[in-house]
Length: 277
Image (cartoon, rainbow, N blue to C red):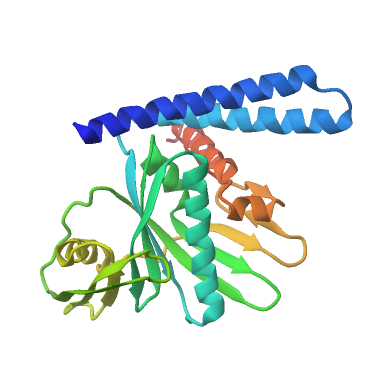
């Protein structure tokens, strides 16, 4: 009952947020005088239009279905400090996105071999929205090229196939992690068939860590590029799948992802409407 109550409360908050966004845009348009105010009003209308589009997409996607999700971020390649900072940046970006939308967000666990983080998010339509994020996120600057893979799972997790998986889990003395506020459990799991392994540190029980490992350990394709972040000259963020782009890199890294999510839904709708779909 508490779970159902929280879901309803989140939906009401989402409607309230949408109403406030549209009212703000309307007020700015009404009060706009001069070029500076017109530009601010135009941006507010653009934001309101995206929020309406996302709300419509959520209804089409099935209403309250998919209001919880698990986001798994994993580094690619070397794991020096520049790569770790990119992982930190992505964790911060998704935290910022959730907080902007008044969604719940917490880091359940972090991993070694490879380094990663697992975030649990809850809010109206979050699973569908985050589908736009799945894939490779590449960061380009003058000093380095770093990449991380983003995977999205429905939450609560369905039990993965634990056949052939060897697991050692234990409770540990409470400590702070890089991403997890309080680590209380550690787990090492290995898949005998593929040789893949994962080391998890999290705030749940050893049994909960085992459930995470059973879903995360199986091999999956690398996936396509979801976004590219150019931080040096001609700074911008691009989604090569939809063509969506913005020069406002800092805003994106603070969690303003609506442009890319809305573009993802627009592409999906266009595909569904085409004669070949």
